[in-house]
Amino acid sequence: MFRNKFATPRLSPDAVERQSRIALFAWNHLGGDAAIAFLNTYNLELEARPLDLAIASAAGCEAVERAIFVKAGAA
Image (tube, rainbow, N blue to C red; front, side, top):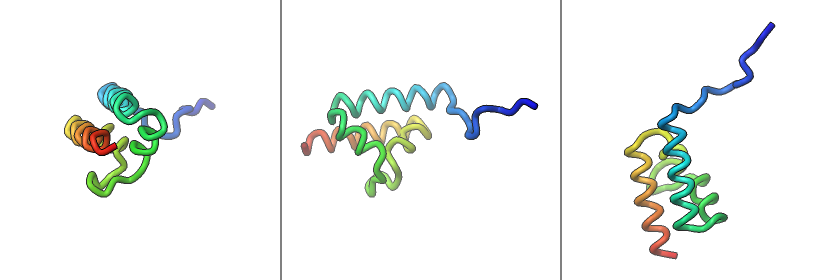
């Protein structure tokens, strides 16, 4: 018997593009370790984990980009 090897739903092509774009954007503006921490930690201002928000919609991705600009300016 054959089973689907993916246990969770796969991301749409648009979601994959947003995920890649926000990861690179964060990496370039915050640096590697800070980008990973920021994207994967719940953010009170965004009321979500930034990576999840960016993947969910174009508007979410734009909100995360603005938050990265603010964080990069404060660093």
